[in-house]
Picture 1 (cartoon, rainbow over the protein chains, first blue to last red):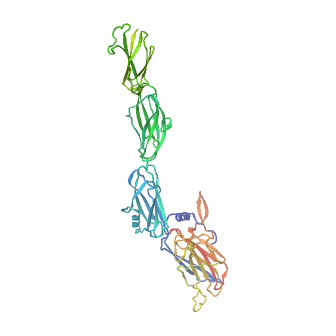
Picture 2 (tube, helix red, strand yellow; picture 1 turned 30 degrees about the vertical axis):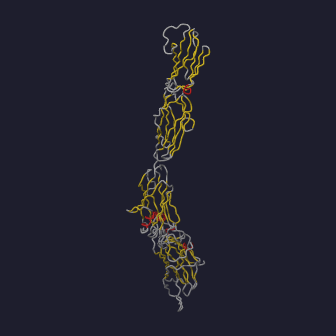
Picture 3 (cartoon, each protein chain N blue to C red; picture 1 turned 180 degrees about the vertical axis):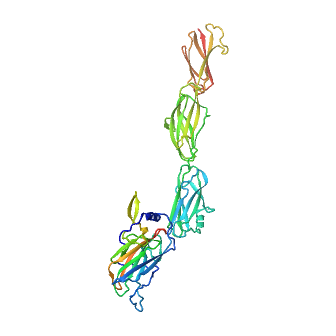
Length: 407
Length: 170
């Protein structure tokens, strides 16, 4: 038959199936298979008389061809950071055409994330790869057969969100150049956590002024690197005005913190010139960028303080003890006593008293001026407080006294 | 075609049964009318030394069929038929001969032959003919044109690949 051969449709499916089989992952022709080729030849003589067919044959024995296939049964194992005794499994298949055994090796792409603690084959967990391979050296895997290996490992702390790839490679012991490998990617889940301190209790007292600073401590209590937004506020009061956060002008900034790390963050603020005793609170919120619902507020309580001076002026007889109670007569000498008292919450500086003496009296002398510098010019009296360094402490008083005569 | 250096691989041959066999010399055994040899081309190409009895899955084997006219007169209508061994897959285009010959193939176990076997498949609802995949080849046949003088030889050859899977080949 010389024409093209045509198959019927009924054979098509079988043909396609054969093609698929050829490209599939079927086991190879087994080692030791003897393939015999027998051919025949026919011929005739010059007169077209046929002769008995002759034949010949030759045999080929199939030798060993290694093949290794490794499958990661847990390509993305779930592991927390930290955690212990996590596992991932691999199946090592002998894809060669004869019995073989395997040598196992491994690679971990990012050091410090996981620590392999054991290699389980069958009912035994081996502590090292060397021990595992010693055991596997005597494990013959038939063609198409497989073994399952369980890798036991720990995950270090502070590794949230950090990926590492564990690759397991199996090499044929009969043909070491033949190998297969598969990998699992381990990414411990990230746990977010931030902490800000202090949480009040400082009783900070400030005069109205500019450029004050307060330092908070920000900590990353999560298990992975995180960016943290810092937001300063002083709600509900006109006392505090925020100038900068961690050196950045304005009321916000962002920092990056490694797990378990902390950083001091300074907030610079001004205090308005409001009444002494006014209070305000400076808040600093640390908020996880990775998980904004996670935040912590630290805060500082502040009270505005000011000195509060009162001046009392009293008249005494010249004995300096008896208050003037009745009338005085011309030529009589009396004393004016000036008493300055600081009733505020903080000291006062540059305390000065001025007085214009009545026209009916004439300055005679200064009877008491400890802590004061007194200047009298005509009827004008000026007293500058110079005691205790010129600073009149809170709750302190200072007094000077002048003698005058009645005109 | 210049013969390649062939390696003897489990060589066997059947005796010629013919009415006019050339009488062999007393000390020289008569030549065998059909000799088949196999040569592992993969090992040879790779520079390997041992191309004898062992072939691995995927290796290419070259088979050479040498027919010698051991009769006293010329012969004609010489025809080789070689079933592709189970476990082997024909290498398309590899069949050749050192004499003019018509080369045909069978994909139905030797019932019929064609120079270009095809199969019919259905694509998008239509029947179309496609070249038969090499896994379907079952036989190779050479029909030598012309006659062959006494003691002359004719060689046919083809190549196969050791199948990767037992079910690959017919």
